[in-house]
Length: 418
Ligand code: GLU
Image (cartoon, rainbow, N blue to C red; front, top):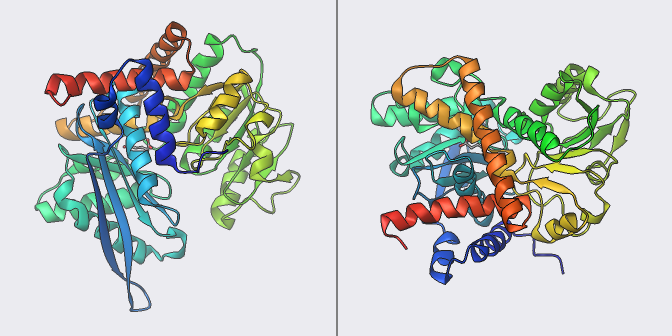
């Protein structure tokens, strides 16, 4: 039977699998599968209608053995506590895989931000921070953008926290605009980090050179970002891309139309009505005959139901949790290489880390410096994960978890927690 599609249960399964391969006992596994703190808050917002609506928000602080909690805030109607717990866990493993000195956390608000006016959105963003102010801070817990939140939202949040403190606290939030203590390269960082890892993986696994066909699920900051990067690189040809409603396909490639497509999405809010492309569904996109498949949207897209029909050689998981454990088994049997989320999409939090370091030292770097640091961290991490994969005969995902868990457990041991 397909796993109940609960991202937290799915994450726990993988942690248990990787931790048992490392020989950790029940006590350690218990520590790894329980978040340290889960906070639920009510956020009242005076709507444009004059009425007060109360939104529910969460912040889960999963583990801080290796450093302050770190992770984004998601605004989405499907947000729920178990999802935020899974996302907070994934942040913990992600930061450990790339070796940056953070634990993991995540936040979310149950809301469809597309239905809010700009003023309502600002009120909600500020209200979220007021509710959580006692629990966050540059040394405690550092939020950032995630699905449906962006630099503008981060600026309001940083400003609200700074007002509460009475002085500027740039290091409380990352993913800020450049004008207010942001870092060069942060917006594209998740996409660029993914591309660095992908290029190295193509070389490592000896995949055919020449143009590689790519399908991208998702056209948000991350999916749209890697579409742009690929359109400038002859090694890749993007043949399909989608949003939450539908997708477009052209076997000759969409790269030359990247600006037109991104503008269409921005103006019309969807991908419908673009000329001379084939309209496809999200399900069809995942099963296209391509070399590389990039899920860059939300969880549980590749499941037991469609995994057997996936034709790509490599799946680069820019989304968090796009593949269920059952699907993983099928993909492994079919020799599909999965570059797991906690490695593939770690570029975002890596440049968040660099932003935070710049905030703390009040000294700002050039883009070249940021990108060369990002590249080194991503490639070194891939090489290390692959070494563990070969040594233990496991998948890339289990290899990445083994690396992450080893690092977190070492820190917990040194602190006397286990
Ligand atoms: N939301 C992004 C992620 O899932 C970035 C988190 C951050 O920069 O803290 O990795």
